[in-house]
Length: 78
Image (cartoon, rainbow, N blue to C red):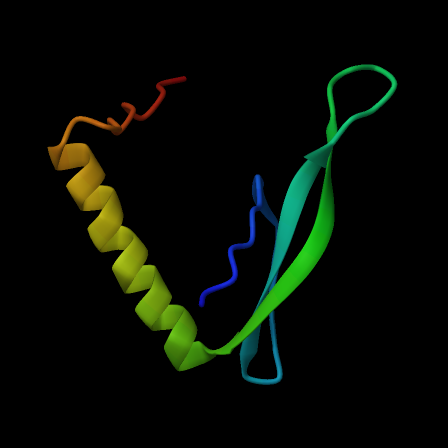
């Protein structure tokens, strides 16, 4: 059985001591109604694992673009 972990976003990514640390963040309500990201869990992996993850995510993004799920935005001009 695999445990599912939900995160709205990454709150922070750090690299130190040969490992990459991702903080998984969730959106928590605030009094002003805008919400605020709060760290909930951390994923720690060696640089090789991080680079493989980067490759896999790039492949997924390419598939999403091909399927029309997402579209790259044009670079804004100033």
